[in-house]
Length: 253
Image 1 (spheres, rainbow, N blue to C red):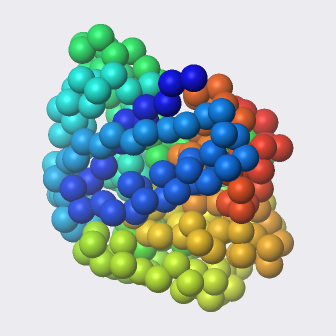
Image 2: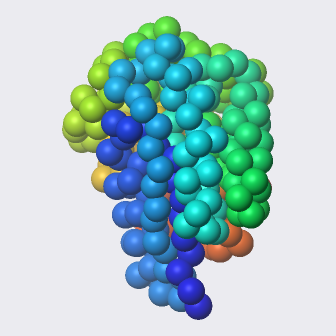
């Protein structure tokens, strides 16, 4: 069977999306060797996580989608969660539709997954009505993410902002720090813990370790994106050692 081509629209300063998604799907090949994947990226300019740069980056998504369509991907994912959520409630639908239209314009009608939409989909699949989360953002942007998630019907019972504005510095955060950060959150009544609500903040090495200690399922924007990518491709949502969401037991949305 031919490789599944994964197209990714990523911020120009993003390092982690192109690390964690390939690592997850490569790990999956060990248990599902019949499915193989290749990864193809287009970049949109963004250096600092500010509302102005996020808006400017969003405006480049259709150009990036058109460039990706030349590679004839099987699916396209848009990486920056906060860039979409900062545009107002429900904007992930608008962004996904715009990317889909750009792809269709170059004869590439394929599924589109945004990390923002993927996180909401994953929370719904987990039946998580109340969550806690960690972000690398400044507090006002974290509140934007909280408001977006709550507008979609999930209550955020607690949130922690690490307050790192430089996107490259976000990628340099040590994921081991999350093993301490999550313990500061109030998980009373929570149904899930989003240990990284950002595809630039690394968390993959500690997802399973935290879930082994936490009282609720643990996920990240990246594991949610992988879950939706696999679901849209009609493949089992199985990735070893990445938490309950990717155990293969959570029904596809």
